[in-house]
Structures are given as C-alpha cells and as structure tokens.
Length: 165
Image 1 (cartoon, rainbow, N blue to C red):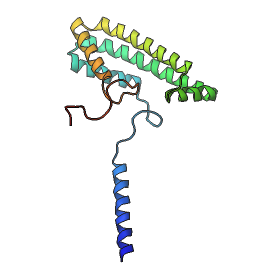
Image 2: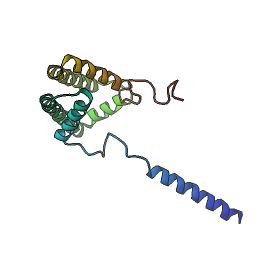
Image 3: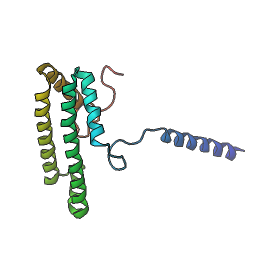
Image 4: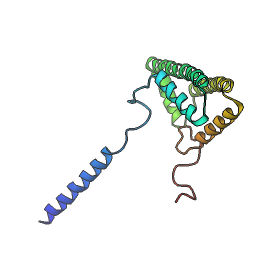
C-alpha cells in the first residue's frame, strides 16, 4: 500500500512538472524562430514610434523605408554569416567560442559592422524626426539598453531591484 501511495505521489509530481514546462512560452531568438518579413517588421517598428513620438504620416512613411532597408541588410548579413559558417566550420567554432567568452576577430568585425549600420540608421532617423522627437527617441533607446537580460550583458542584473521586492 505504501509503495502504491509513493508511486502515485511520484507520478503526480512528474505530471505537474510536465504541465508546467509545457506552459512556458517558446524560447525567443536563436535557431527555430521563423524570421519575420523585413517589410512587416519595419511597419511594426514605425507604427510603434508613431504612437510613442506622435509622428506625422510623412515621418512614418520615411521611417518605414529606413527600417525596412536596415532589416533587409540584417537579413543579408545573417545569411552571409550562415553561409560562412557552413563553409568554414573552424570559423563557426571560433565565433561560437567567442560568444562563450573567448576572443575572436570575426566577432569583433561583426560587432563593428553592426555598430556602423546602427550609426547610419541613427543618422537617417535624426534627419526625419524633429529635435524634440529625436531627444525622446534617444532617451527611449537608452532606457531599452538598460533593461535586464540584454544579450550583450548591458543593463542591471535580472531580478527584482532594491525597491521591487
């Protein structure tokens, strides 16, 4: 009887674990996540900025073009990196090692390229927005960079802050 009770309790605990794990949202990023269409992604980004910064229709249309070009460039860069990784498995291992804390010139080059694209996009956005809108946007970007759990390690550690307990 004790063994049956023990077995039933164990089965219930395992069932609870399985149900809990299945209720978790899917992992964001990485392999397995379908790529969003650059045009759709650009429209969503421009719409979000329109709501946050009170943009006019012309600004929204211009930002959509800027974002679409940026997202298309990122997609091309990702494809080039995938192609390079499949051609040169040693290069791929280097980049994966760099993500885990190692140092890699390939990762440094990628980071430099991304920063260059970001600076170009920022310059284009600055031309489209008013000074007030641009200041608000840069403040929003800085706040976003300070979020916990950023992949680049920026921001405060995840978990409740001193006043959030």
